[in-house]
Image (cartoon, rainbow, N blue to C red; front, side):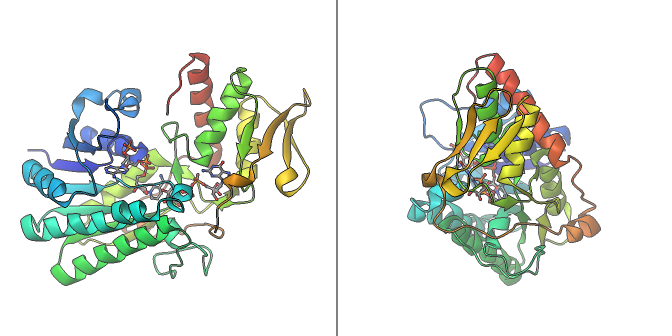
Length: 345
Ligand code: NAP
Ligand code: GDD
């Protein structure tokens, strides 16, 4: 019989790609969502054509007993904890909620596993944000952490809890220190998709311009479809552990916009400095990109470049999709959506 997986955060980007991967491997997949709206938004599952192949359960991460009952009912072999308040910028405004969902809720899961089902394998979604004001580049599993947002501090708490429960109680709990991973299914609040969706709408006359924050921020951006393969491989190891997943290549937001603009058929020229910077379409002279200071963060992380050599050596994992292929696929998907008049978020 195939394995049973419980995925929290099934409505998110990684939940969708991980579901598809596990279904392809013959798993029974149960996915949890939170009841924030009157209807369940499964647009990502629809795009992957797997909506009807997953069992959906309501789960609020801030409710300990809810977690206990869901785990008891599903009796999973593997739990993938992907649910989180995942917007770093918003975490500065919602530090308490973020701490509960991204930090405390992970201890709820660990306690439930320890008490009810110590043989279950757990994956915890840690983040490159743990490195924050990075003390070394590139970052590996042994680079010291220096979180720079309530999001990252909460994720760091959860990360060390996972390590502690593994060492104290022998739980099969692994944490993936994942660098940014994107896709056409990325949420509109993240900079990659905000850019590709914005430029597609501008191209089709549905939006006037794109407002961005820090253009000089640098990230190691990979493809989510590649990263969920690494997540699964971590959980299949005989011994649990922590692994960095990254491409090892870093680009600035400015470079991302320039490339995405080219994919959308614009030849972008940059003018001005700081908050007066503007991205101009050379052909029409129109301003396509301007800066909104409200989009800057109170604290930023340093240059994020991951070194995934451990994952390559132990898990046999390497990312396949390049940054250029990723951006092109995202722009294409958003041009298609904008062409159909679809708003997908
Ligand atoms: P995402 O698209 O934002 O999905 C987050 C999921 O968490 C959504 O399903 C969301 O539900 C759910 N959620 C949020 N608050 C909840 C709550 N209180 N109770 C129950 N569910 C809740 O994020 P993602 O990109 O798939 O990332 C998955 C995980 O990996 C997250 O933990 C994220 O922090 C972490 N991570 C992501 C990246 C990346 O680059 N993508 C990198 C490192 C780590 P709604 O749909 O209702 O909002
Ligand atoms: N969101 C956003 N919106 N970011 C902007 C904007 C904008 O208009 N303009 C510039 N940026 C910059 C941010 O300042 C940040 O430095 C960078 O773009 C990336 O921002 P996000 O796409 O929001 O991602 P993130 O790196 O903060 O967080 C994502 O990756 C983490 C892994 O490193 C999220 O998925 C986190 O959940 C994840 O842990």
